[in-house]
Length: 307
Ligand SMILES: *[C@@H]1O[C@H](CO)[C@@H](O)[C@H](O)[C@H]1NC(C)=O
Image 1 (cartoon, rainbow, N blue to C red):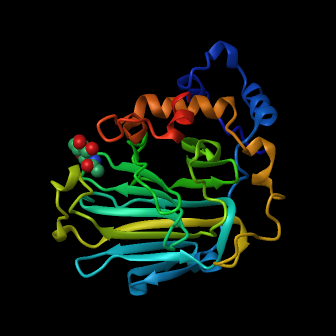
Image 2: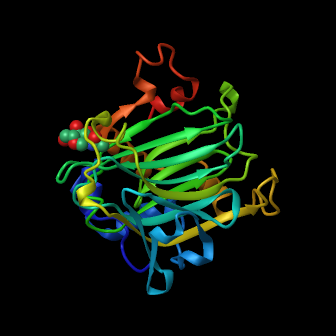
């Protein structure tokens, strides 16, 4: 490992006392002994893993496709999708969101099986007026049923620099990461009667579009088209998944890849601390605690609460 992956500030913010830390090597000790951090993404050009889905003329390529920009203007947004379909794996993207006045725009990065009873794992970035914070909304659909929104603010300005947004998906857990920080988990609660995505291959999608009927302050702030075009930038395009045909409910290496291993079936102690930190400091909304919408706690939330 070339550099210490954890900064002291992060660790202290997450509840470690400076005295118990001292050295980066100690942090590294934790990381290597309890590690369930996904393998580092491998940056590849767009074309290796992705193709445009619609309005291909609103996608611009730089540096041999290592960097890509999506454009939204008043005529259209645009989107792209993975070439392959996958059952489980680690999927990530570096994104730099629409800067300045992005109110009304939504940038999404998601996995979906796109069929009638679809499974879906969503990151949606809701834009805002200049200087106002983005909202990151996540959702999980299983067997066509969603309505599991969680919303957070980010602890950085997502329009200034690239950040990694990733999904780790195996038979036991789905983890949403922002950089190295897990911001959400969805555990397999089959035993509680909740469907878990396991047999419908998904593709990875991204898009930028206008959603000013709901996105910003619930639809109050409209897109200011005089600021168009709105531009979101992408890098990395990492996919490390078990590739299946779109119909297959199985793929050859299933159960035998790194993300299937025991240490990836749940978060470790450091990751739970980080998740709690996000919960405590940045959560705006969690369907699990919305009693007016769900008088009875949704079953999977029982495993969400003790985080
Ligand atoms: C936009 O900014 C307002 C005011 O700070 C805030 O209430 C809202 O949550 C922000 N985000 C979105 C997407 O509306």
